[in-house]
Image 1 (cartoon, rainbow, N blue to C red):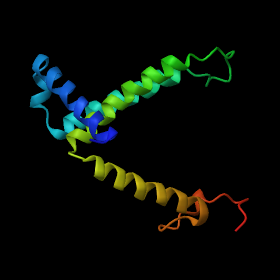
Image 2 (cartoon, one colour):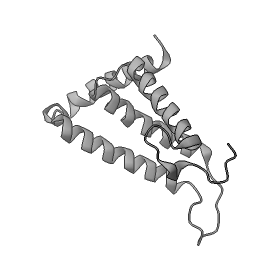
Image 3 (cartoon, rainbow, N blue to C red):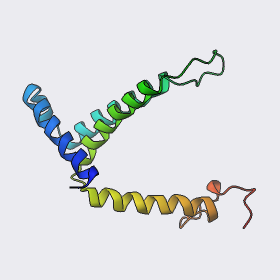
Image 4 (cartoon, one colour):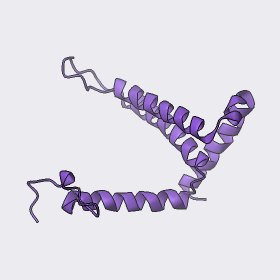
Length: 126
């Protein structure tokens, strides 16, 4: 079992336990589930941001990277739930990631297959 498969399995085990305590999750449509978990991801990202120095009008604080890591793991939990709900296998996740990764590289060099020149750095030397 690879590490991504392990994480997905552990998350599925957790979600089964949560559904026992909160059966309303079992009654949700896929759309309702995805909207709820996208909102949870947005909230976790906001919690990460709260630990960072992003307000230029405020004095910087010492960043507690342990808190940032903990919130990042919370974010991963919800993302794994989405992967599981979409029945994405670790293989599919990696395949899609690799394809998107290459697309992002291509966009930085020549705008990619869709010719999106707004991604190309104008100071880049060919």
